[in-house]
Length: 281
Image (cartoon, rainbow, N blue to C red; front, side, top):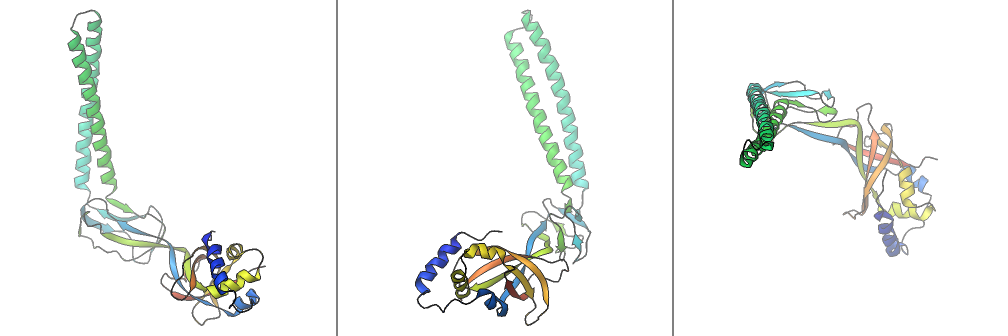
């Protein structure tokens, strides 16, 4: 858990400007017991699913809202053209291997003849040059074959992360291009989520005045619970601060992100919630 180091510096500047006018510091735990802070649920991780090769979409292997695992097959693109491309590149690679074997044998034969002055030095050098070119040609063929294998594998589009998948943005039969960078679906990780909320600087100043251990250390101990607005029963508990954004916003609050378990999947990204902050003993 990390709270930006700039936070104490920012608060010290605010304290210097406001301490003469600040209300007397009250016990912060009492203040937290009655205060809630408006927040919003965000996914802890999300990923767009997209194609990297062009072709006709032939299959969709999920329903909107499904839980998917990393590596799970989601979409398929017509593969015959990529099968043929791979077969052609393998044939070229085999031919280049044969050419290299011939060039190696010829270079070895002429080198031996050259030691007996049976052929000219130029003939030996020409054979060595042909050997070098044969090696380069094989490397090029191997690269084309590896690219063809990658393109064929890319006709099966798999989940980049685990999570909940949304709507498929393209239907079976659609021709998929790659120039426009079209997303096919989005996955959000929902086992844990993030809640972003704001704490007024006035509250944080009171906390900073009331504790000897320092504000950053205390924020790392914050326990974050979230509720539906106006609801007493928490939707989720035991969240922990991840980081804060040490900038003044319009209502003079510090924006804080916390991560919270979502095992019941009740916290939906975009949901507005009330945040309760406590300091466990």
